[in-house]
Length: 466
Image 1 (spheres, rainbow, N blue to C red):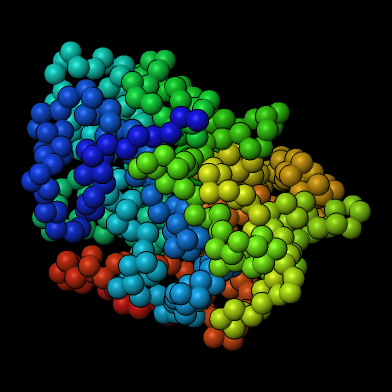
Image 2 (cartoon, rainbow, N blue to C red):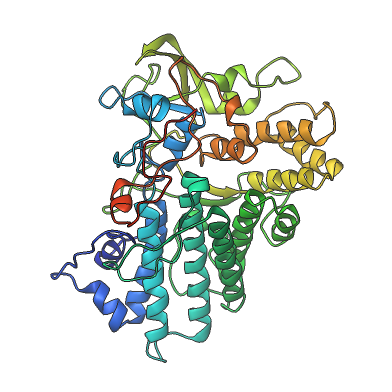
């Protein structure tokens, strides 16, 4: 197993965000060296470190996947030591001063974006003999793609609040202005399209190692297929369905390939690396409930196979435990079995999602026969369900599409919350207790709000939910 070795330089690059006071570590001048006297080794180490940076906070128990899963009623975290997984994320209000909850999932992506900006500036200052033109092109394309992914994670949590995009500034300068949601998406598209151009000129190999989560996508030409998959995902969020189909033509979508084919976050117990904390071993007895639990609606909403069994995805990804519990007032009896060990990889993007994105784009364009074909492939292959037999119109097929995205991408990236918000359907989420709220977005962190004058009109108070 090839894992990423994180250097002190990488850690320095990831230590600061775009809107906080950055006090330099005078005992470790690695960042200054990279900025002012870059070397090939320093640039490549920092580039590799971006994979570590974009992965940080994804698989934590209060990380991106779990918190968006809670907001989207995929999951619970019933940690008795911290009831805020319920009292804040489900009851509310979301508090930007709560760095692990309402104000979470903001600083880390910007730290990685900043690291990428430092790499891009360093590339321009390298001695002519340090890297070939192809190596510089490949590195630039890689960096811009990862930056686009980081920006996508930011706007997925803040949504109509927008987010800063002009962040390549002095860390002690005034914060970058907050751009609109549409402007952020346009910036992501520009990054991805620019990256694709650079990757096309990037030769046959990257000059740095990628983790084994990128096996099959670890050359510029194949990494560009991942780039185009991200481009399609963003196009869907922008309702640019024609653009999504165009991007998918350059992606790794393949109806003849395994649905699990794709790009993954990988984990290890190597010193300096991280493990997948979505595998919950808080209770030694595997038959008993754990802190991380699955929402019971995963079973109650599941469609039936021809023989009467539930959707195979629900059966494969969850397990009922007996007797049920009533932790923190929430009756539960379902846990996840998606991640069997703390070394299991987590998909960033897989073939199954790309096929569903194509169906989603075709529904948006009213090309319903093509959409049914792709939906049926996922239903029969992944869910062991019979082919779709419902009404063939846009509303009905969108409902079916969202059902399949929910079960195919369960606990992989908060997609249910993002998708239902996109289509104005968050009010269809269950409220398990009368005081539970449904949130449409997370607020900006309090420190970011305090640094701004004037304070933004939205996103700097408590998010009350509805």
